[in-house]
Image 1 (spheres, rainbow, N blue to C red):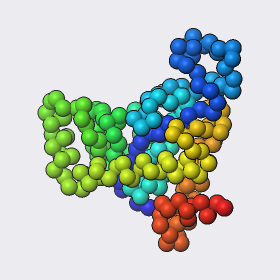
Image 2: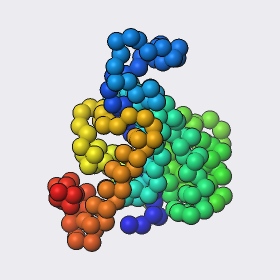
Image 3: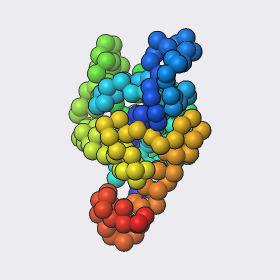
Image 4: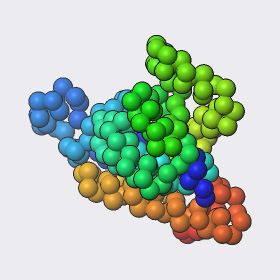
Length: 222
């Protein structure tokens, strides 16, 4: 389970219970008939599920999909902030060759700083087009076959892992609704889901079973 190439992404989980409309939330106002409200949740928009009130898990995985690092915060917590928390561990402990994410992680200063420490931060860099550094970076990503391959494989490397975590936790539905309320409880809940997945993936690897096949993972926890 090599950490030579890592991937980063975020997935949103809906808070348990009703949602707190942003207009009320900004005022700290809870409508009288609103019941079972998780007041720790916040709003964020997912490209897949639209607006979600709840929490987000920021996951770092290997190319095979094995979780290496995680952060759990409310939905509005940005991907860039989560990556900043992980930066020291990534650069000084894990030390991958490449670290791949979507455009939410594109930041020129970070790309240059990480390169100086031997880690290539790979993103599509679609918003970063102007200037010689932007052009050089985009050309580098395009012409280096191994780097281009890492970028092409990013979605299939990490995105299905969030679905496996949700299934292990028993949550189903479009926005992956949670069964716990409050940031501390949700952190524990999602962390246990990630830990369970790690154990299952290791078991699959040891027993030479299909690494991500959910039927085998489910049998391991039956």
